[in-house]
Amino acid sequence: MEPLNASRVFAPSDRTLPIMLARRAEEFGERPLVTAGEETWTYAQARDAAARFAGDLASAGVAAGDRVALICSNRIEFVQVLLGCAWLGAVLVPVNVASRGAQLQHILSNSGARLLIVERDFIGNLAHVDLSIVALEKIWAIGGSTDVRSGGLTTQPLPPLGKARQAASVRSGDLLAILYTSGTTGPSKGVCCPHAQYFWWGLNTSHLLGLRPGDVLHTTLPLFHTNALNTFFQALLLGIHVVYGKRFSASNFFRALCEHRATVTYLLGAMVPILLAQKLSAEERAHTTRIALAPGVPAKFHEEFTARTGIRLLDGYGSTETNFTIGTTIERQRAGTMGPVFEGFQARVVDEEDNDVADGHPGELILRADAPFAFASGYFGMPEKTVEAWRNLWFHSGDRVVREPDGHFRFIDRLKDAIRRRGENISAFEVEQVLLAHTAVANAAVFAVTSELAEDEVMAAIVLSGGQQVSELDLVKFCEPRLPYFAVPRYIEFVGDLPTTENGKVQKYKLRAQGLSPRTWDRDAVGYKLAR
Image 1 (tube, rainbow, N blue to C red):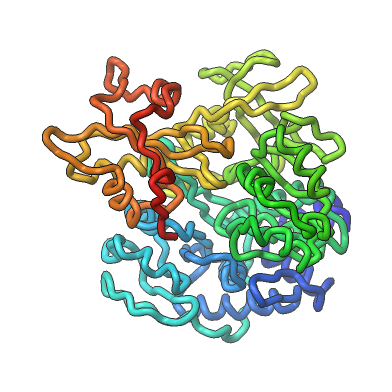
Image 2: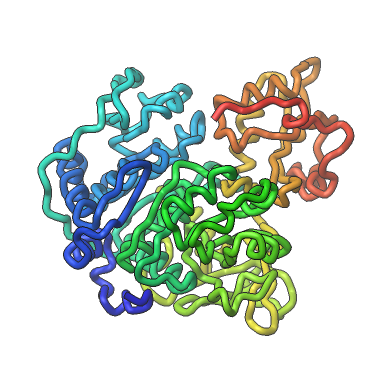
């Protein structure tokens, strides 16, 4: 099936995961749909797993609209929980497996999840979470039960698939998932993603990648992020096969493409220079992969990567709140730009008061969708943040771009105080709150500096309390159990004070401009390895 035909096959009221899955299972029955680890499900098996796990959820008291939190790596149980929630009309809350401490406490509190399903390896993430003040009623463990007794809760093993249940009457505007994306000046925000948003994600991405019958998609990106979650819908809409690798490994990347006979893969930012830094191998040309969706990869790496591997890199723009809104096909792509606005969307570049700026001049990218529910519907439990982001009926991306006279958009930088490292959004605010919890720290400013891989690294400027002493390494060890590993600062510098405005706001642009200095401590330079 051609990607754009899917919009005619699935009427607006049919753009829900239960309807799409049921219809595709009837059409493609025994064709493979999804592989994770050693397990592969056909379209029919995926439909049956959805119906049976929905029965398990219902037996546990979960109802339509309830939230189910999930801490799980790329394994078949992730797909099982996604499909079961959707079939029942419940809402999946996928949580980054590195989340812990205050961030995880906030996600569980804000989402109001009644059930937490957690992979055995990540139960330790709950160590600094007070379960007595959240809405959780049950915890199920994937891979066996581990005793966690907190707030009156004890984990139980994930139940086996039970009796099949009829699909709920889900509407295209109903929530499929709440994905938490790092806040910039506050806690992480839960992005409310309706069913139809992922229909459009799958449809648009399929078109821009030029997907076709017989394709095999392969990604090592984590399913708790929108990029990998989107691949499931690409496969579902086209009747093709998606393979989820456990995690990104530079030494195993091309071997996995060969093993699964992948034709399409997915990369982010620093992954390309990391792969290029590897020694040449025969596997780099033995694969059958023709294209990779690779947003955020610097233009200077495109030609070298394609010449070396034969894989062409497709840029573009999308976010958890929006969709694949800016981009073009590989044949029309122009190096250094994200592409033009894609059909079905509108894009403007504006100043601080939402007035359009002229082509060639930088401003904030704001976006709007033509179809209902093609974008997220807001931030869960944060009405004031929703109004702020969607003010004047346009979604404000917080990204500074330039629109060229020919309609192509070029990314400049982020207006937000957020840091992006190895495909992860990091809230400077959340890192600062952890640092400020240390008794020796009087003030802290966290900001991005550019790494040798042309991406962000986390740096912290620290003002110590009078008379207090602490080493940089001790601060890192303090942060480690309280932050995702990727958010722990690599660089730390002790300073006498922080540059501020007249009203006391830290001027981080001055810190970013200064960057590293001879006094800056580097975690990598001392050889300290973070636990993951």
